[in-house]
Image 1 (cartoon, rainbow, N blue to C red):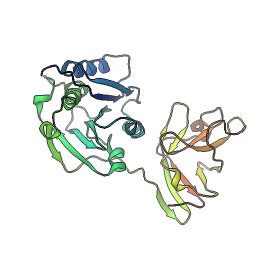
Image 2: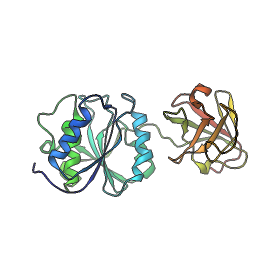
Image 3: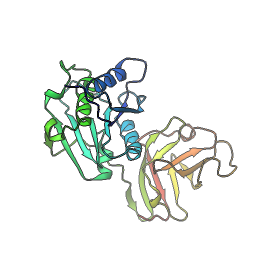
Image 4: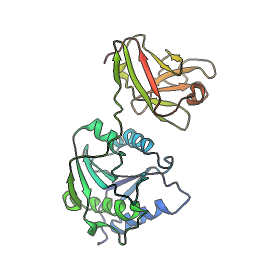
Length: 268
């Protein structure tokens, strides 16, 4: 492929870390094809093989980028297997990576998307390693997109995708909604699948026999006690559970995928 000079934004989201050569090699492949590409790291510190953590970080960040951004997400326990390499056109952006659910929460939110199975190996780096599709398939495909190659030339349309479970809360009974923790950040704050429109009046959350009825605008909203648990609307748009100067996940013995029950008046 000829070296281009088209300005495009390509993001990287991986579990590769920064100690080894993996991320640098992917950037090298992209720049060898399009020297004008602007490469942005969303994160390369996703916990190893944690597809849900990657899906959340992508969900929380893609709307911060302009139209035509190309997101390369590689958290890929099935690399080398029969899982499909895919490209998704969604929300006026592109998403490139493995078909393992990593893009499903973005697609569930947006609803309208087109998916393609990447089959045109003319755009792959040769030879294709059985263990490094990030470098040999996803990076060169992203670079090709950045030069204006249409998705239809890169692969064939897909009618189905591997999906993670929906993050939409479920109404259990009148005034009772079941949600769950979808992410725990490095500070120990617990991100729930609840959004602000689910809350009204004297709503309270229940998790591990803990009742949380305190809702604040920010961490130091009032002088609460060390370790006191409260909720707030996080920057990703979800209700989060935090503790004053302490990791809420430890205080609550909470973990990802754990159920959170919302009791009381609710708008949905």
